[in-house]
Length: 590
Image (cartoon, rainbow, N blue to C red; front, side, top):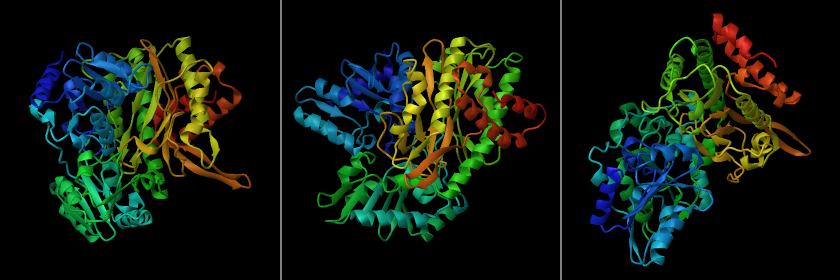
């Protein structure tokens, strides 16, 4: 059993807490969190980006989704923590488990700042049903984590309108129009991505996600940015002042919320805002629970942002294509392993103009490691890459012009018929989705079948979504759109940047994933309606060495050949000598 788990139980006992929850969250319901907020990792040892730890006096469980079943199972071994596979038959949800486990009069505890207001409401109903109580004003991690990192305070930086396409004032004006239509006097904004998008600012307070720890409040006449003032340069502070934005310390958002005018109306997204902020709202203030008015404008990229994405993907395409060449020509000549491959790709990216840094921790997974959907190599897990089987590389970068996310699966030498079969079936589904044309109003759930159909015909599947939104120099995972047969009913809009990433995974053998980013584009509008389609942003060859053409029909081949012709046209001008000659072969027609 992990020592951290024992220490947490002692702290629970000291505070009279019978069941304690540690989610993977910061004060903003972020998917990726800074070092200060990685308490679930500290206690459980599980390093994945998604999961919630629930601890009682004699039991502990970690809930996570299908991306992490294999990884969590390995990392929790011997920890005294049971893996609870979300969505699997017989596995209760966290609220269901709590309701079944919490006894009459017992106490449920968590740090209210890392639990959303909506989650709190659910926990409160359970506590009331059990005649128990909630303790949400104690952060037990502070008591047991002696060397807990401080809150990050990295310098912020400003994106010019030449890159964002819209000024801070224009965005504030749009938000205020939406507030007015809903009858809101004040908007309290908690999402780090939304605050940074609204303010045209970026930071470095979360690894691989260029955001700053901050909240924002907007009224019809002013705006407030709650942030550590020390991270803002004099120039940025002057620009904010010119646009009517007042700067207040980060933690002052709670006091601000307590002092909202009586009988006024505040808008906040209770699925994002933390429960302590919600608790600070005076009783006389009406709360409108609504999706943040920044969410859809942030997801629908303007023409300047789309053009920036294209430029970023050209640079990223050069870097990843050069990695592919390097792998093919060196795997049987020099020692290489998962970590050295990741380092080599980072080296190629750093050579490209306007590169900022990785958009997530690189997933470089050789052989059986590829079956761990979100595996990321460490010194302990790192293995050699040999001249056989498959290497899965899911990586991305932030450039000043946009964010990338790409997966390529490389044949490192001789591959089996089984590997080639599923490599080709996954590629077939990827091409079918990328070629989709649909009537306006369709959602990602309507299109998901196109990517899965080749595998479903074989009674096979993959346990993750097919596509997610991508932010503009923000989070590599962005909503509200999603491509999944169980996805949210959000129509795909022109300007949305979305991934196309089917996969296939055989535990103990290999993993395959093919991922391009796409942008939704306008098609034809006629008597039958308005039609949309995808356009690929990613420009990197698929590895033809692993393709078994028997599984492709003539239309599939035309799609693949057309894509490779575009890659060749786009990337070839940036290569020379042997690399250029090789690209001609790598993008040959089949």
